[in-house]
Length: 441
Ligand code: 9WN
Image (cartoon, helix red, strand yellow):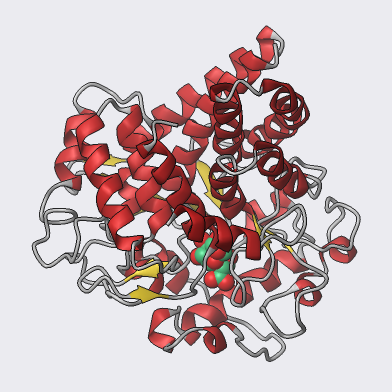
């Protein structure tokens, strides 16, 4: 399986960066890149470092890392909305020089996690030289990125990141966003053609046309204000505090702190990073719902919680270093009949949305299928929480799912059927990391 996974990453390698998938996603995606670096670290630490540096070459002046860097050589009409639609450098004063163009959105910050894995693997191999140079180069960029998220994306100082679009969450059509998205009224905009449906077996695996219209309308509104963050905060119809994004930022801040130590960063910067992680944990704790046993997002525009039983609710586990009793309560929900204890599951792997959630759908994208990258995130979180046995079971079962050598984007939770795009880079990458964990690497 390791050979096959490495082969997928090799085939998706575009020379210094990796496309998310061969046909559906021919560009570089931000949070995919963090996971891909984790996998590449086991093949070639220098190449893994380059993956992150290539993405960060397109960091915005604000510190934002764009959610997509568009591949100028992608076949025409391969992805919508593509570079022509965003034309970011032309529209947005803070965008970097183009081409390549970028989107104006961002995604969860998996990058410091990837960078730290590169460093860890290099150290295990006693091959620190190149990796230390890489850390020195990436560290200030990561710091600017996290600072952007902790300030522009959290002017309230709540410890929770605000997103402007469901795509920023990475869990696009999760029921987490249903109510906030339904409140968005779509206005006049040029007609467009969805290209995503051409790449999957059935439209039921992807978001609906109504959801898509709202996605494109939100893009339109961001373009109209030239991505001015203050204007977005004031007028944008979709603003939400995202607990999974915020939890990934907490764990990424922990990783950044380790990187800061390795590169001998000034004390003031280390103190700043520690304060961010602490603030993030506090923010997550304030969103804990004892009723659902999960952490809940918040619809900031309408100032109401967004209750939904989804995998994002395990945010405190992902953030780690929990308040007393919180680990037990999160684990109780994870192993309850709402998630891993559901007897109809084909394998005990976490569905993206709980089958007990009325809006659950077993084949539709983020509404139920199992996503290997999120299983990886929970596995990693269990390891960090000292739950070695539970983590090990999850790792073995997750690898079993991939043993049909379908590095699919997501899987039907009751049948194990691979869905979405095949040969997905981040799926191959997390498989490599899981396999390496077996070898004790
Ligand atoms: C929009 C690339 C990306 C992932 C996201 C996943 C999907 C894009 C889409 O693919 O999103 O960003 O067109 O559906 O939801 O998490 O980063 O793999």
